[in-house]
Every structure is written in structure tokens, then in C-alpha cells.
Length: 540
Image: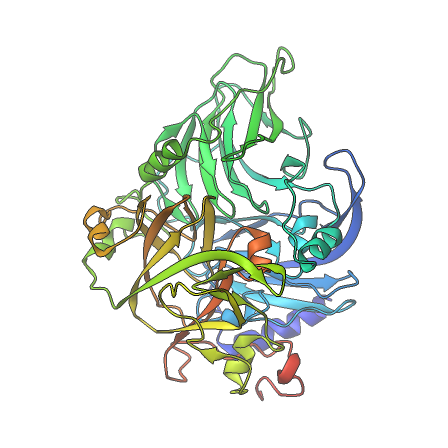
């Protein structure tokens, strides 16, 4: 296997131009298997990576090249995607079905990624079928390069904290439920790092400060995170250093990641770490333990309560999360040196979610289109000019008000355009949206219907830049994004059942040139499937 990776690395450096010789390489070899897990006390079929649930963390530094050999020992095709990793000029390896061919059972694929000009806290997850409900996810951390200043002292420890709602049912049963056109029932519990109530612990020493990288890897529900008796100082959100505001409670919506600093400044004993569902009539709670090294005793009594259905509370908190303009990001220059609020807009795209029935089965959509996968990854069809796989602009850039219909929806956009996207939520549930390949500025969010006058209240100075954003019930959220990354990029609901049943589409960022300055060539080791089978990547 080492020989295989070495040969592949030589090919990448010599012929692909994907990586730069001066940047370090980190090698990973992962075996994906099924295994029995018991997170809520009953046996389930979990998806393990090297025998671990959750999977191993990826530790990296800005600009590192990650060579990840994934062997699929499942009996189904499998893919991993990398939430928040921008895959600069290289959507071929994004790891969703619209860009990347699945890894067949018993075969392997080597991802070649570069965390170019990125820092922060992210995660990976399985993107096909309903595998995410069985595990296969893990944390990604990208540290700053040694010479780049970080706006806080190095913590005594750095923990990944993966939280999420969870079902006792196997992922195959949940998928069958959705395939039958039904909605999923309410989940059975909340996990913290793959464990049920009080199943995990985080060790701390009196007086020291620790970093917690909290990611909601669940399937549907927003979670409120808190640590009994302790404040959490927010320092980073999905690759952006934030104003350092302290919170007792922090809402983490599906797909989102936050970094907080926690100081062990309380009397030496054990304390609850709590994650509980938000905006639900029934509150599910998951707990872990913050364990002082000289603890005088275990936790006692019930875990501390938190906010439940209060929307205004959450909205007001979201507005306090802003960019630290003077801190460096992945480069030495301050984050505030990019004046996004002074750039003229190229266009406005409005996206409205909807739910309905098609053929007697539950479906979800965006601007009236419920996405159906094509027989060939869209990026490959685009690269090989295979006709009939998809149509550019098969989804309207504005809500149509019509009924749901099925299509392989692709929205065409121009490279280097500066775009305003408004997510409109006319439903009575909170939603969460993610854009692959990009980080965007969250310039505004409010209740009611968005209109051009809403721009008067935009934050055009220090809005947070991130990759996943919530949209509150009967509300809207507006973002600004510079389309500087050519490729085919997935825009999706992070509510995994809604994503699976059509609430997603692809944005084709097109340059109109065939230059390596704009987009890398297809990887030499790219798998070819569907109507791309039998074709060739590139001659050496």
C-alpha cells in the first residue's frame, strides 16, 4: 500500500499540478467496515473507520496535502465528503455523488486533498445513501502555520466534540422508510462523540484552558451546547476567528462547527457537558463529563437545563457571532482586509425550500425542483461533454411558486461573480444550509419576507464568514459569496432526510477557459462510472 501511495504521489506532483512541492504531506489509510455499536444501549450496525466510531480525527496545518486511502469493506458503494474543506480548483474530489464516483465494495480510492489557505474546525462524513445515520464521520482540524499569529494563547488541550441526534434503528431501515415515501420519526437520543448519557469524558486540570471543537454531525435537529458552571469563549467558526464573546449556552445547528475556549476555573469535581434539542416539543438530551484531574466527586442531580423553543433568543445570539477583523486568518494579513461590503453585486439568487408529495411519496425541493441524481456524476459529465445528463439552469434562480417536480437541478453561475444568495424559509421549522467549495459572509437574517429594503440592515463590516447557516422558521438569511472556485458544487439542506429526498442542487461555477490557473485537470486516479465509464482521465 505504501508503494501504491508513493507512485500516486509522484504522479500528482509531476503531472497534475494539484499540489505544491513545498507544502507537507500527511498520509492516512482507512478501512471502512460495519461493526456492532451500542450508543443508546441497543445493538446497531455502525460504520467504522479503522474500527473506530466516530472515525479518527484528521490533524493538519494550513496548505497541507492530505493523501487519504479509503478501502471500502462494506457491501455497498461508499463515499466520504469533507464538510467545509474548499477543494480549491478541484471539485472532482469533493466526495458527493454529483462530483465523485462511489468506491465499489471491496475496492479503494485515494483522495488527494489540499487544505489550501484554510484554518479551523470541520468534519468529514459519508455522503451516499443514508450512511450518515450509521457513523463514518470524524473531526478535521486545520492549525495555523507556525509564523501566523493566532488571537489566543495555545490551549492546554484540544478536543473534538461531535454532537448529533441519533436513531436506534439501523441506517438501512431509515433509508427504506424514506424510500417508501414516509417522513422519519422523532430520533431516540443525542450522542456526544458517539456515546449516550454520561458515556464520554474530557479530562482537564485546575486553572488550565482547553479548546473544544464542537460540530453538529446529526441528521436534523439543532442542539444547544453547555457546560455546567463554565463559560465558553467563542474563538473560531468554520475557519474564521471570531470576536471573543463568552456564552453560557451555544446553539449549534445541523452541520455547523464552533471552537470555544473553556477554563477549568471551578471547584475540583465533575461537571455535566450537555447537548439538547432545540425547537422541539419533546427535548432530547445527551451528556458527557468534564472531569477535573483532582475531582472531589462525580456529577450529581439532573443536568443543567437550557433554552428549548425560543427562536428570538437564538436569532439574537446568531447576530452576536462576528468576525475578528484584526486577527490573522490562514495568511498574515488581517481578516478585515477583505472589504466584502464594498464589492458591487453581480446578481441575486433567492432560494426557497418546499415540501410536498410527488407520486404519493414525500419529497422536498428548492425553488420547486426536487433533485434526483443522474446516472453519471455531474462533474464528470461536464468534463467529458456527455450530453443528456443534466441541463444548466434547470432550476430557477428565484422561487417560482409552483408545485414540486423532479429534475437533476443545476444552476449556472459565472466564475469571479460576487453574488448575493437569500435563503427563504416559508415553513414552520428551522432549516440549515451548506455550500460546498466556499466560505460565505452571513450579512443578514430576520423574520418575515425578504425584499430589497432588507439590505438596509445588512452587516457589511464584520459579518461572520462560514460554510453552513441556519434559517429560522418563516424567516430569511442572506449571504454574500465570491465565486472564485471553479467547479460543480453541492448546495444542500443539512437536514439529511430532506437532502436525501431532493432538497439540494448543484451550482456550476464556470470559467469558460481550460486553464490550470482556474481549475485543475481531472485527477489521474479518478474513478469513472455511469456514462463516463471506459473513458480516460488524461494521458501522462
